Length: 249
Image 1 (cartoon, rainbow, N blue to C red):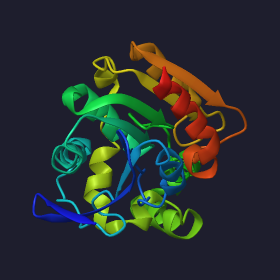
Image 2 (cartoon, helix red, strand yellow):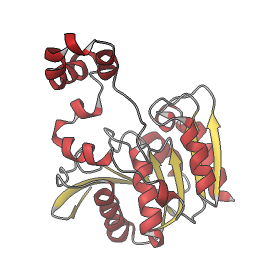
Image 3 (cartoon, rainbow, N blue to C red):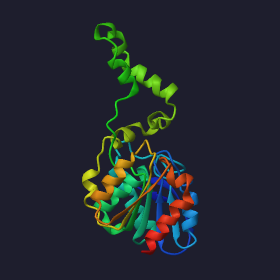
Image 4 (cartoon, rainbow, N blue to C red):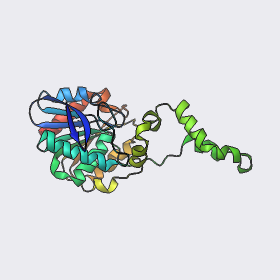
């Protein structure tokens, strides 16, 4: 199914019947990323899945969009398609959108579930920069001049999975999003919130889960041992069990 929002075609799917739950995928995902999880939920609830702009079958977003642009689109989607408050489940970037939504548009959701959610940027120094640091200045003038090209080559050949390289049409959006820090927004959330995390996550480290638990007043945290970033994609049954128990409370 499709709906027009901000003159853009947005692809979504609806499964089951009952109270609504909206599932929002992470950066690079589609409605199929959380489809198994949504199908489990659809036995008791109406599950909604959406292709975020730029992914799946949805149109691309405007170049100036950051987290707030995506969140405002989700707000309109909830109002136009779901037409009531909804439970919200977000993975990674989908969780980041949920944080912004809960902080700025609290009347659109009733509960929030964050799975390995991003909400700020790790202070990492790239491996290329680390290597250049050890080259004496008097010997690496040419190399340092070529740094931007070396860096691009590194991400193109060695790190083919880089989000920036994989989705060049979203480069401006991605660069804006990764500079946004929603830490202050996490303190504004007063919805019942379930935080689910993979202990071995290297994209959104588990220390962030404990920070969210501290900042969000009505939150519950569960950390899954020996699991990485794709927790809800790889283990939908285990994730749904936790969400179902949370929603029954």
